[in-house]
Length: 139
Image 1: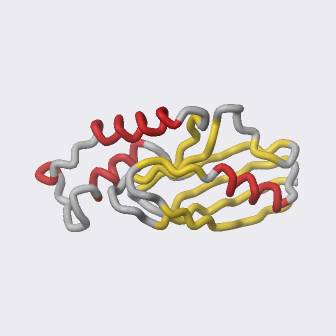
Image 2: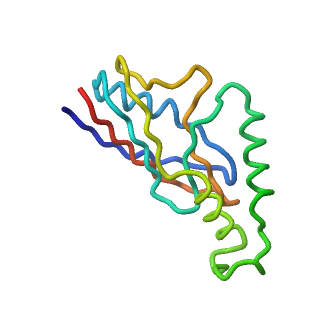
Image 3: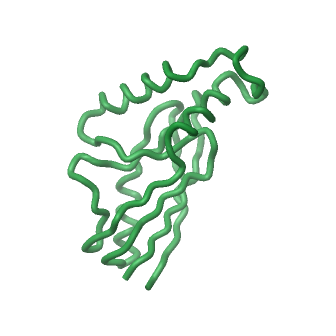
């Protein structure tokens, strides 16, 4: 059994989804692991990770719009407001999604579906630099 780690630093442009599929695929390839499991973990509490469609960018825009409407930015609803009106809504959006992904690795590549990609989902309005830890285990 072999394992490798890598940390991606991903710049976001504010609220929305940023594709990191290519970076993760490069890491899997460089690991030389043919069969195993890739785990992606975001080290933040106001951003999250998704596996989502990579063919039509309207899907990503619609997801961001839906979550923006789902979680109010009204600061009177929250106690935690010191970091701005988008921070607590960002924490709630992250709680509704996920902090980690597990992707099977087969024949030296991620076993994603044809229309699937890996995305960092930024829940804050301003651009941020986010860290995603990649960990692969296998043979």
